[in-house]
Amino acid sequence: MGSVVIRNLDDAVIERFKTKAELNNRSLEAELRDALARTAPLTPDQKRDLLEWVKITLPPGSPDSTDLIRKDRDSR
Image (cartoon, rainbow, N blue to C red):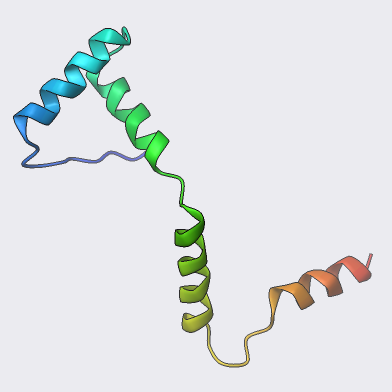
């Protein structure tokens, strides 16, 4: 698992998370881990933007994954 250091975090933000952690009977680290995990999923708009970015960055003439999947499925 990775680690992240967040510098220059406002003291008031830290205190609010400490309060939440106490209310949830867990450590500050566990509270922050949970908050990050809950906000990590991409929204539908972000997923569309990511798909468009991938399409733009692929070299011209790259195969369509749909065709590759269909060809693999048909070969079985």
